[in-house]
Amino acid sequence: MQASRSASAKASTNSRRRSPPPRQGPRNDAGNGRRVVANIALSLDGHYDGPGNPTNMAWVMPYAITDVARDHMTSLRESATTALLGRVNAEGFLGFWPTVIDMEGADARDVGFAKWLVDTDKVVFSSTLGEAPWQRTTIVDRPAAEVVADLKATEGGDILVLSSASVIKALLASDQIDRLAITLFPVFLGGGPRLFDDGLPAGQWTLASQAAGDHGTLALVYDRVR
Image (cartoon, rainbow, N blue to C red):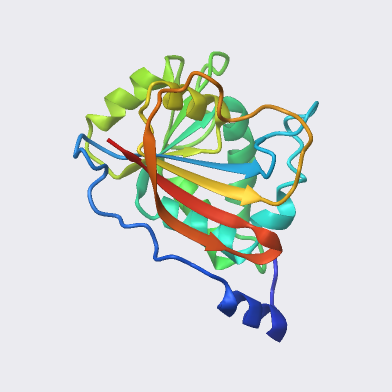
């Protein structure tokens, strides 16, 4: 966490190119229930994990604490009332983020996300967890497409998939993602799994917002054209 920034860093921040924040508006262009938003970080060569060790996210850390990444995450969670996670991500997110709430010197945006994650309704996809070890959490062992179809029929804000590639891939395959939020980090991982597999439904996306930040980080938000 950064307590202060130099004058040159501030000048750099002020000079970055940004587009307006993505519109909130209806949950999706078709007006068909709640909007499904998928958030994920990708390397410049298109991977969401490196080769060999999927739990090693050291490549993310220099970029995840930039202003553009923090602002990006804040804008996504502000309109979301349900979080979707796979088991591995749930254990990582919910093992770390609640500790940030009382962390001395923590960035206010990180604290805001941590509080939101604790307080919001969470759905965790798992075939091994018997019951939820976290508050406001439902464990499901069903196809993501079915779960999301049920959630879209309920009242609420956005349904936000938090960096769980297996869930995002399933929803891309069923064409149920309305907004795709990508934080692009300027690093080559040289291997590992990719988010976009061959055989996804053909379709058009429109750029809703873009922002560039420190170290070449890009925050990109695309809306599905239906």
